[in-house]
Image 1: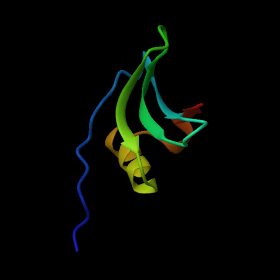
Image 2 (image 1 turned 90 degrees about the vertical axis):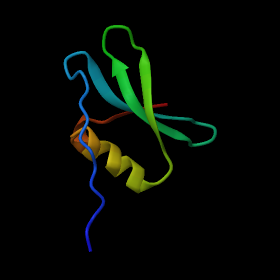
Image 3 (image 1 turned 45 degrees about the vertical axis):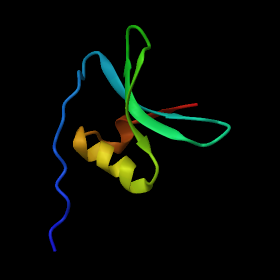
Length: 71
């Protein structure tokens, strides 16, 4: 009846970009943020299903077009 509520979180939009890191070999995916200046990746959560990806987008209020994918 009632959907799962997602607690909204924030990130530094000026210095970080949302990224999904994917393994070429295993296909494992991890969502997180990459620092624009240093290139350092901060892992937030593993993506095991399409629902996990949607949860990440909703939690940090990210539009689908803003999300980059790295191999």
